[in-house]
Amino acid sequence: MNGVVGTELVCQVGFIVKDINEAKKKWAQFLGVEEPEATLCGEYEITQTEFMGQPAPEANSLLAFFDVGPGLQLELIQPNEAPSTWRNALNEMGEGIHHVAFHIKGMKMQEAVKRCEDFGMTLEQKGEYGDASGRYTYMNAYKDLKCIVELLESDK
Image (cartoon, rainbow, N blue to C red; front, side, top):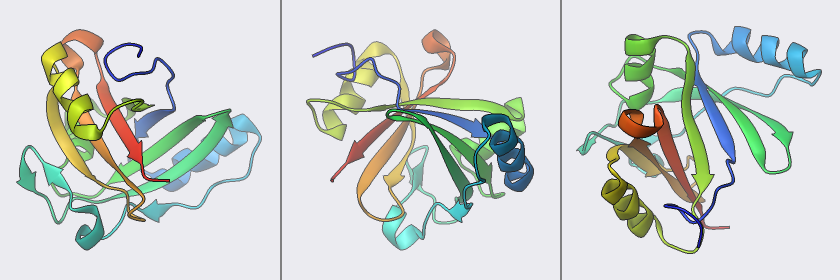
C-alpha cells in the first residue's frame, strides 16, 4: 500500500468560486468542452454533513465537474452562506484551489482518517455523496501540505 491513503493518484482538484456559472463558462472555453450542469451537493437527509464535528444541515454548495483525463476531475464549488469548509475557504482565502482528492485504496474511510490524523491532519468536514453512493472527508493539511486533502470512498 502506497502512502498515507493507499494511493498517490490524484483523482480531483477542487476550486472554490464565487460565481459557478461564470467559472464553468471560462473553464469550458479553456478546455474546449461543453459546460457541465451545476447541481446542489445534496439534501442533508442524505448527505448528513458535519462541519468541525457538528451537524451542518444548512451547509450546501453548487457543484460542477469537468472530466479532464483518465480518472481526473476538476470540481467547481460555489458555497452557500452557511458555515462549511467551502464557505471558510472563500471567506478566508478567496477563490482558488480548495482541495486535492484521492480515492482511498485498501482501507475503509475510518482507517484513512486515522492515518491522516496520525500524519498531522485534522478532520474538517465529512458527509455522504448527494446520491448516497459513497462518502467524503475533508482533512485540513495546510500545516504540512498547504491544502485540504479530500478522501473519497465510493460504494460502487
